[in-house]
Image 1 (cartoon, helix red, strand yellow):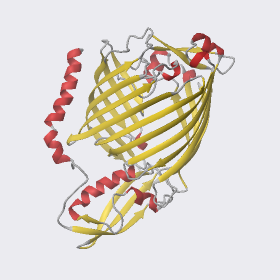
Image 2 (image 1 turned 90 degrees about the horizontal axis):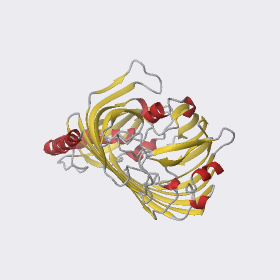
Image 3 (image 1 turned 180 degrees about the vertical axis):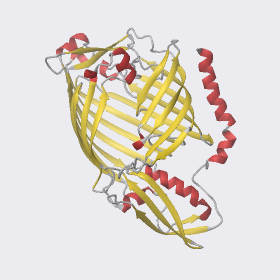
Image 4 (image 1 turned 90 degrees about the vertical axis):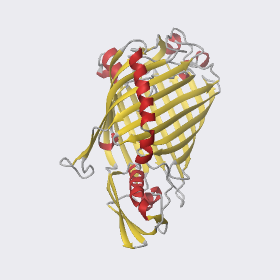
Length: 471
């Protein structure tokens, strides 16, 4: 197994070095283009927007009416701004066309097809951490599923506002409402929003034993209740940069059974967790597609201070994600992703020590394990090739003019590490976790993603893993 993993890492490094020179000829090195002849953008027209306001589209463009641009840069600007408009998630199709007026003037025509903004969304989600855990360890128990109904307007009043509510039944019963407005000022740089949710369930995980979650269930009462309310304020000074400031109140309660089984679930054996959370998030996102990136880079940092009112003390933590995506040769794509977290102080109750395996952060090949800890790091390397990129038009409907299908076979390798002052009987803490494998990514309508991966890990284990809409 080790020679295979080593070969995967070496192959990724070799590809990066071998294609380095070619990459410079495939993609622009930056957004600066020096050209001899200039043209003026006279007018910008928009077609296909039955609801979206014109200024929402213009906000995303890299230029405006009256700007002077290089004529030789028009093909590049067409691709760049098409990606920007598509990343708003307001449209199923985006096309741009520069129309010459004379030798020194051009008009821009933006042609879009809007998505279906208001529709009841029925969701079926597994309560377990991933499909393999539900299928293998939970014996495909349908009682461990959630069925939800969400009614959301994703383009409320045509301003890219989002207003919605969700009712969920099943393993976890939940009700939530949320609202966000990306811009409320004339300069379209400031936004705000809020969210409120209430969830309760009769079963929950209460401790990690040998890197597995243990569950407790009470058929007569709800064993876990969670209430969250938050307000946030955003600043978006440019296309790729965003600041978010959030104030949240969290009020959680567990049954006496949980405290008896794990007195350290909350601080000092409390059944209740009440806290105020202040957080700041900073994003730089210069990738081609925010949902499935193939070239560009991004940086997301999140810093939070938790002020415990009951069941917790003060805690500060920061997380970071950095991604670099390359297109070294036609139809070949290479990506590097780093994720990590630092927490102070480390002496925190069990509910604050989740690290790798419980959410979207995990080392591929360790899907069956949970590794708790205060600090962790994760590196992912993927080398993939585009096998198919088509749009099937014969099945088109009004808000889905075609069903896109993209397929990317790949090889990959991961490295992860978690530190924990209280590892208990964990055998995966404070040691290097590494894996490698082969797989395929499938992306279809509305950027829905399916990942099918066969992975080997350092424990000598291997298996086929299935993931939906995860990175």
